[in-house]
Length: 47
Image (cartoon, rainbow, N blue to C red; front, side, top):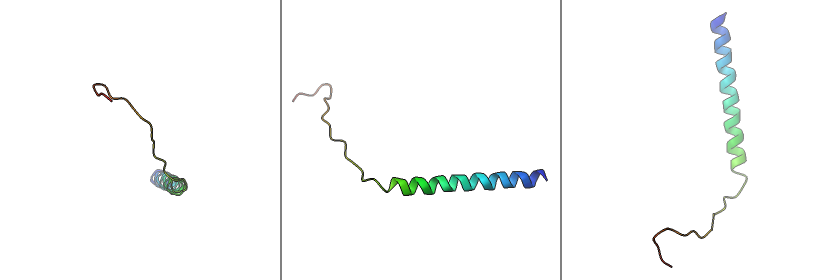
């Protein structure tokens, strides 16, 4: 009985992780990536 319960727990965990990955993949592809364009000053350089 205990082994069956443990197997069911691992399967449920795998399904939850799988759903999370599918959601992250779908949601991550909806927005266009934006470039971060911001001037920075580096120490030791002259402009």
